[in-house]
Length: 121
Figure 1 (cartoon, rainbow, N blue to C red):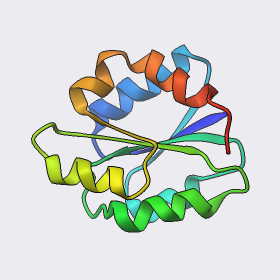
Figure 2 (figure 1 turned 60 degrees about the horizontal axis):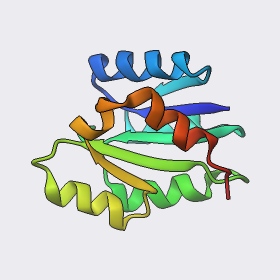
Figure 3 (figure 1 turned 45 degrees about the vertical axis):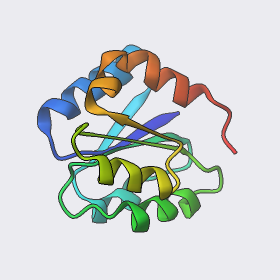
């Protein structure tokens, strides 16, 4: 089982990788939307998307993630609470869940564990 993180913020990367390690799951990071699909491998259970990533188009990226593997990983997104339109776009693009940064980081290990252990479709 693994998590793939799309994020360009080094502090976020560190916090998320630490939480993944805490729950015993590998975490691979893609720093751009273009490099994300190369990081997806069978066994990826969760893709976490930082909506602040430059060049991100959720309406284009999320459908690609959903069809990239035989077993579809869960897709969650997080971003600034003031970016309402972007949060809404992520939700309508097919993310399984969308969180403000505060919601996402408040209980990060539990949240990751919850989405990693949900049975894949």
